[in-house]
Structures are given as structure tokens and as C-alpha cells.
Length: 198
Length: 225
Image (cartoon, rainbow over all chains, first blue to last red; front, side, top):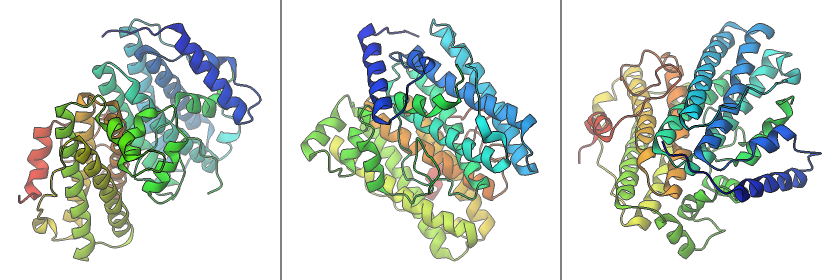
């Protein structure tokens, strides 16, 4: 699979944009991890961006199985999600290597009060899954290699299914919009930045 | 809804207008120009929209859009037939109404995109009378077609040349996935396992695509002409 390397100016542009977004949103600062992750420009970097989100989800569900007092239905779904997201992590790590880059390592994560109750846990899970869908949908059209796009597609469809199931557990409409909106990588990274400890 | 939703408004009814507004805030995702113009977005004039859709599109893209459009017409007809049949109640009826409206919105957008690319197919004549027998049969077919629909988009996404059309297809693909998961759950299928249609539901953590041939062999059962 060909890896196309963009000139560094594009990365610089994206980081500047991210900082501008952060400033506009009134964020005190965009963390250094986010700034590094924002140097997106080619398929390998998009894969590593997706990998970061999958680390976040996989860790969130795996820890929840230990830390949250879950009802039987919620526990079964959380187990399923933990398994699925861990498989996504493995696949994206392998894909990153195939594209000639070292997979990003898992960041240190801190989910704050989200493990305080099943309700709080599911609420953040809902946000993560909807965010994940929008992240893949936003990044998809930027992917050049059709094999990478196909792989991303097989994952995002499962993320969409996860989102629907978590929403149903929360008595929320499973498919609230006729079109799942895309998010920019900048927006996604800004929204997950609070959970990344370094 | 007061809860934070960084990437997606929560719990709102489907709305093309709302979707367009969300696109206005996603300037960096310029690939949505096609869909925005197809929806009649205020931000873009018709001329700009036409350029946007055509950019990078090849003949195969029109075929793919018309294929997707046919599936959306089929799903929308099925939901209409389901609602009119009186067989459904409760959550099933709610899904049929809401998802059916969503499929009409998909069809409307795809019709506009196809028209701009050279010509939209007509809605097929459909016949679901064979499955309007009892709620279980009907819901099982609805779930099957939603799973097949998701698999159909997944199968075509890597073949789409125009980035704008790809962006539109992806925005629809995950909504079909949500419908499929909700229906699988409703009829007790679990979100992936035990479906009778091999290939239409994820195997483990990964969804499976279906080719046009596979999809049409199933969807074609309900198309008269």
C-alpha cells in the first residue's frame, strides 16, 4: 500500500487550525499530546488517529468491567464492546505497520467520574461511540488507499451499531439523525483531550 | 438535551435542515459540499453544488448512487407497507415510522446527487405482500434489509471515486448500521450473531461488505419492476 507523505507545511497548518479552534472554544490550552496527534496528513496518520480513539474506547470498557457496578444487560454489552474495540486496536496497529509507520502507543487515560455509576458510564460511552462514528465518517474521504478505506468501513459500521445499542440502553433514540455528521480530526481530538492524561 | 455532545446532537429528530446546519460548522470537512448542495443548502448556490458533486466523479459513481437510491426506495416502501399493514405496534411501529422517514430523506438526497451526475433512476415498483403476514415475519425481513443495506454501502464505499459522494455515502452508511442494530436488538437477534443472512451482519468486531450481486439477489425478491 503506497504511503504518501505530505509536505510538513500541511501538518503545521492543521496544528495551527487546531490551536485556533481551541482558542475560539475558550479552551485554556490544547495539550501537547493532541498537538502531536494533529499532525495528520496521510493514511498512516489517519490510521493512528483512529487507533488512538480505539485505545480510548477499549480501555474505557475494559476498565469498566472491573470498576462499575453494571446490570446484567449493561455488563453483557460492555463485555462485547471491550472485545470488539480491542480487536479494532489490534487491526489498526497491524495496519499502521503495514503502512510503514510505528503504531502510536496507548496514551495514559483518565476517565474521571465516569465510573461512578452505570448511568455515568453509559452516558460517556454514548458520547465516545457517537464521536467515533463522526470521526471515521470525517476521516474516510481523506483516505487514499481503498484497502485502508475498506478496513475503516468495516470498523465504523460496528461503531455505529455500538452507538445504537448504548443509546437503546439509555432509552435514547438509536438513530437520532438521518445522516451521521462528520467531525474534523481537530474537533474529535479536542473532545477526547480531557481524558488523555499525558 | 442538556448533556454534552461534542460530535453529534443527541436525541433530535432527523432533519435535513439540521444536518445542513451541522455541515456549516464543519468547514474542514469540505467533502460534504455535494450533500449540502443536494439538500438545497443555503450556503451554496446551485452552480457551486453542481461542480462540487461532479468533481472527481466517474461514470461508476452514478451507477453506485443509483444502486443506493434503489435500496433506499425499497426500504422506504417496506416501512410504508409495514405501517399501513397494521401489524406493528409499540417500539416496532415507532421504528417503522421514524426509520421510514429517514430512508425517504436518504432517497431524496441521492436523487438529487444522481440527477446532477446524469440521471436518477425511477423508484422501483415493489411488492411486500408475501411478508405482510405476521409481525415476526415482517420484522425479520425489515431487519434483514437494514443489515443488507449497511453491507451494501460498505461494499461500495471503496469503489466510489468522488470524495464528495463518498462522504455522503458514509454519512448514510452508519445510519443504516444503527437501524440494523436497533432492529436486530428488537427481534432478539443480538447485534451481530444469529442472523439468517450470512454476510449481512458483522463477524465479531468487523462488519462484512456485500457485493451488488449478493445484495440484489436478496433485495430483488421485493422488486416487481
